[in-house]
Length: 425
Image 1 (cartoon, rainbow, N blue to C red):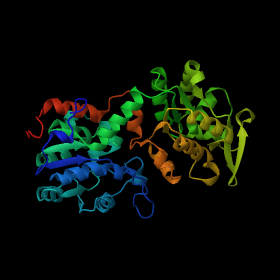
Image 2 (cartoon, rainbow, N blue to C red; image 1 turned 90 degrees about the horizontal axis):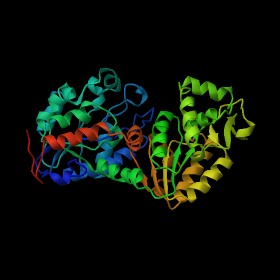
Image 3 (cartoon, rainbow, N blue to C red; image 1 turned 45 degrees about the vertical axis):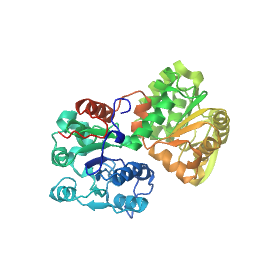
């Protein structure tokens, strides 16, 4: 048991049917509908491999995309094929979540076999909109169709889906109400590594916050500054733009229109409050870049506004950020510095990530766009730890106890066990 949560070490797994909830949610190629980045799939392998090798009958539950970002919604059959290729052992797939076909295949499993079910978010109760609007408690989620159909077939539930740890859905928090439960190896590793970043970072500690999901950045920012986790915050992307606006810098109409369109104008007031309290510890870009007919143009902040949208930080900002990064002992990166997908506006993101990879600091990177960027520039080997989490990572670092952590702790109290003994209810 670790931090009040059971692990795989607490159970004799041979011959047991295990419901394993992983997060392999990946960006999909718009044409082939195949995963474009398999980072999360790779991180799921240790738990699957261990369960199979110890003779468990492993049933893998995952989601792919959601009902809000429908472009990434799709079947999990490609994931099953990729897992089989990477493990070098068969992974069966059933085009069903909890209906008769899925239940029959689960009951037919033999020791050491692996079965992946279809996308759990094909079930209404697992959808993001259902979670947001209906808001069932974990106890209520334990009575949903999915849990009531699958849980009676299992001896143990294992949650390994750190990237979905901020979600409250039946396969994430409902199973713990009715089954002995444990965390998988990915979740175990994530919690241990991120606790090191949050509680004992070597100084100086830098947080580099960028990207377009500024809600995440603002969740982290105040917390790590107030708790003296971060010595400095380096800003870029839309985070940096919001901070510049809060300081009274006029970016230009195209950039302001984009911020308004995204509904992010409300964060300017928050940024002003944070700057008043922590201005000396927040580093803003000194120059920015835009794209004019596919050609990069840089301009110093004191020469703004621009008639074109700001799409990257400039060379002087990259140089200053690089200097600070190379002098740091701990670095956390979340969110690209600009539109790294385009050659003319990739300089900021590539420059900052290159400095992190070159530095001797303990470095942590998280978020889907950040992972895509570090893989694009082939710099992953230079990063100490790449987290599978995005929203979950942000909330963990802001000090929030995540729903699946609460659920696993509750299960440990409800289903106590001696080492290597399962107490099926």
